[in-house]
Length: 56
Image (cartoon, rainbow, N blue to C red; front, side):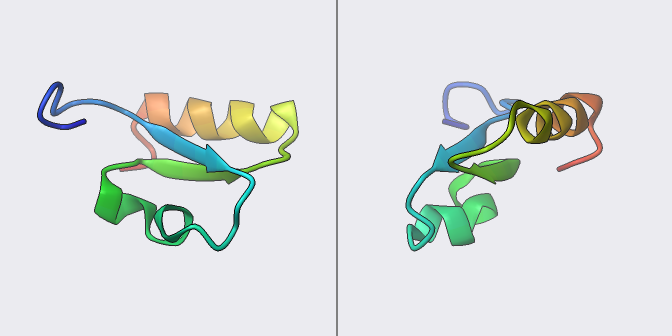
């Protein structure tokens, strides 16, 4: 993902909490994580923080 765009602001989402990407998302290049099922308010807050640069 970073090979294409080093400034990408990706968020991972899954319904599988045991997925290694969910527990170590930064290692895989993601800025944040949101577990399914999620509420729209939860996703909205994470998107706001990532886009505002509050989450690195």
